[in-house]
Amino acid sequence: MRHIRLGVNIDHVATVRNARGVAYPDPVRAALIAIAAGADGITAHLREDRRHIRDADIVALKARLTKPLNFEMAATDEMLKIALEIKPHAVCLVPEKRTEITTEGGLDVIGGHNHLRPFIARLREAGIRVSLFIDPEQKQLDMARALGAPVVELHTGAYAEHPDDLGQLQRLITSAAHSKVLGLECHAGHGLTKTNVGPIAAIPEVIELNIGHFLIGEAILVGLSKAIADMRAAIDRGAVSLSPV
Image 1: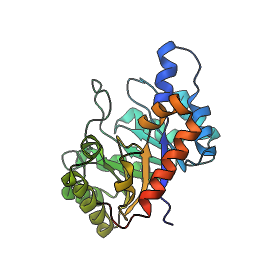
Image 2: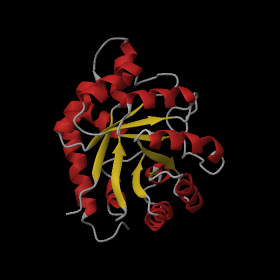
Image 3: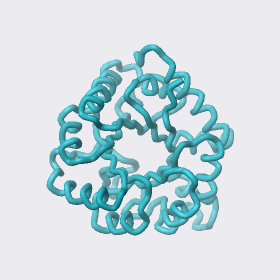
Image 4: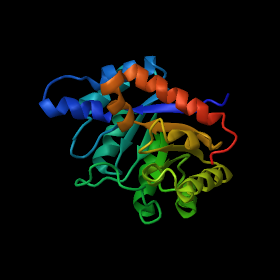
């Protein structure tokens, strides 16, 4: 059976912790539980405003994880400095607005190519894998390839909001296929749940899914280990499907 890697985003464990200004729940402990439950990696987004994950969390995650750390960050000088000091397994460059609730849309790598090019080069020189979180559009994929990023993560938000819209799913299918033509490793994520992940897992070019909000929300009700096990089962069912549609 095709194994699709599951990256668990632990940002909202930190959101709950920060709501009371105490030391618990501990995002690092959640990450270790997630790995024990079957996660293939951990994702954490250090935002400019530190609304959830904090600098100390990233340091502790890098020190204690036995699986890859995927460090989500905006393309700013501050975050580049932190990434080069911590040296996570991978960096995923994402758009970031201080006023947004969560990431809104993919990174515009076409409009921002002059700004992004040196960031990607510095990270790759340091031996860090670089992923670009982009909308499922051919032109964005073409620019990602031109910028030298080896990995793209397709933004599945529009599909997640309208999972019955075959047009949104087809955009992802077409983009994933194009990523393979370009020689890019294809990941996907944003808004995925155990009820809508199947068609995405069925896309043959997708080899990694990054999921956070649903898993942490579900963990409040059933526990983190079970939430991850249920998601793993849903992904595996999708991966053996004959077609994503």
